[in-house]
Image (tube, rainbow over all chains, first blue to last red; front, side, top):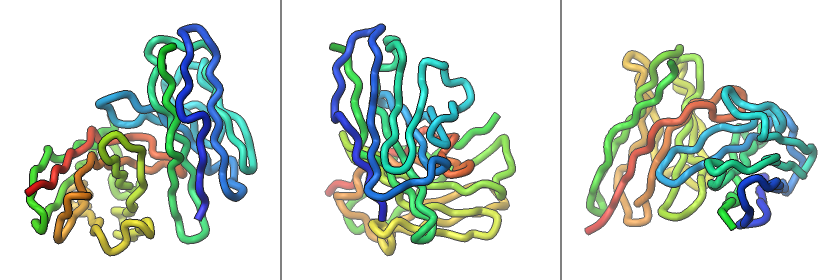
Length: 111
Length: 117
């Protein structure tokens, strides 16, 4: 079973700064099988990025995803006040039979 | 518009049974997998399992296999998550979500389950 590790646990930044979030897998993950979500307090998660680098519908272009193999990155180019939230990566493993895994999350808070 | 609407909050006692629901609309319910995700208080997201309403093919996370049952009634576009005997440790928010390729593109609003004596 693939384990996802996210770093840092908490990222303290100011609006306008660049945020770089890391997601590392214990085994190689197909880029097609890596997604990122944003969750704000009291809300359901929202899909940001799928296929490691494709933005979901309606997601601003300040959000970008990259990476391959075991190392993936979510970048927020210029933080807006509404971007302070928790971010999760998620992978799909076709073997064993169709398991999904979430990372532990990175909290981006206001410095 | 795609929507997943979950049933309301529940307060139960340990040992009681429970079935919560997730009703899909605005898309072909039988053509997309529906997953369930647990979020314990102050914690992260945990994938529990997934069902394909078209043929009821169901898969579970090893962590939740045998602990919960996932089902669906395609005639009313509704997926379910059920427990036969709740524990205090089942206290959490539970989300349903539609799976597109491998990502979960639409989410329900969540159902808060509180288990307390």
